[in-house]
Image 1 (cartoon, rainbow, N blue to C red):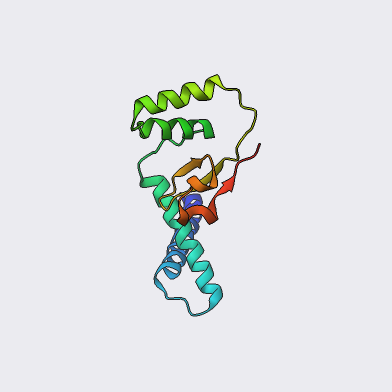
Image 2 (spheres, rainbow, N blue to C red; image 1 turned 120 degrees about the vertical axis):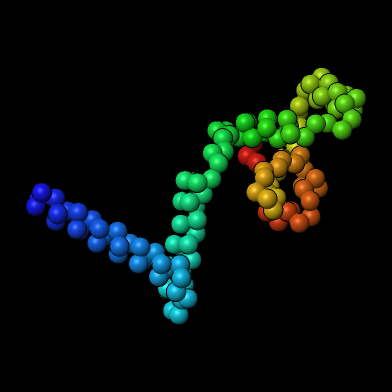
Length: 133
């Protein structure tokens, strides 16, 4: 029994110290710029950890193809006749000239693809990145 008291005491002391450090970084307003930077980092890190532990488990797509497929399934085509014509036209004609495609993220964090820079909304044009060939 005496052998267990020492490790239990040090474990308890370590946990209390971690709790004090946690509360200092969360509750105490920063005075020094270094304290502000460390506090911001810790609060972001802590919120991400709590989101991982307590938030719903979201099944993230494993590849970019899964993201594209998910996006295509979410937005049904508005006019099925014109989309069929576009699909048949795209499959019938060989692609001799590849256009530059762009990838951009909206304000909510969703990924979007555009066939040209003109298709990207004005507010996200500066963030659009060309896809590799």
